[in-house]
Image (tube, rainbow, N blue to C red; front, side, top):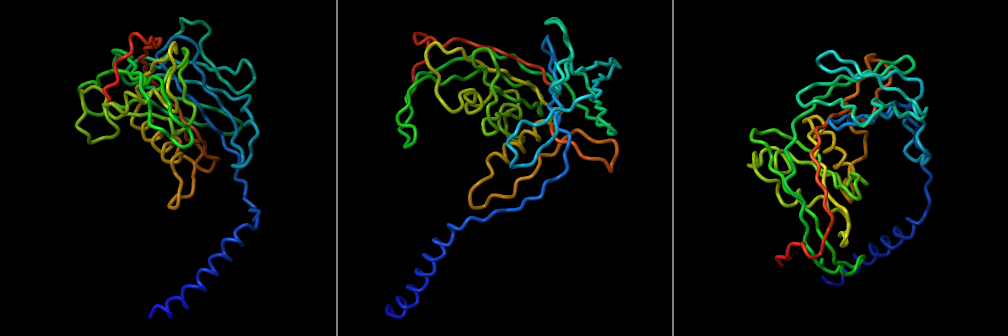
Length: 306
């Protein structure tokens, strides 16, 4: 029985080795280029200062050049009280802005906002609502030494986390952004941090509670902070539609491995009023923002519980 098994397995090993060698052949894929589409990056807030809606044209998947800006478009945002905000591309770079002073404020909690973009022969629209956001109570930090990792070695530094309590009433959704040296940072899709009430998703018994630990510490992303670092958090209120949009981006960013599914465009809330016209990409959203920062002082660091 064993002899027969050996006679059977050796040819398989030989064929496997041949297959592995043959995998070295280079295959050039002739990928089709889809139609150019409008890409919208529009996020308005309740914070004073300039609001920006960025418009660009999509490019092929393997095209690494800077996307071309959309020029000559007419861009307006209208709130539910009928007030119209005109956005202008003053620099001619596809960044359409409203507000000329640091005192100008657009977003108001509880109001809805309708975006309208006229570009060439197409008219695009989108709507969003500016939701409530809780106050950030504090930002704290702990001096910790992380376990040895083969590609990083031993690491020691400070893990920052924030404390805030979700509002009572199920269904509040949030986008948590680290703030480093005074600026919110969203460097890559895998670091997007979102919350449903005080946890990760709907259905968790987290309504009205303090945000759970992984979400609190999500402002520390790929590396530990050093003493003297200026760090903090921006807590953005978002709609359920925005929550779903960011969830899809997370899934695409983490889509890999043996059972990965083909990548696809994330569904946009920007709609072409002509059903036969070119669809748009990107998103239009609104947020109320709660913010707090601190400077890491080793003498004030919390003790490591480990």
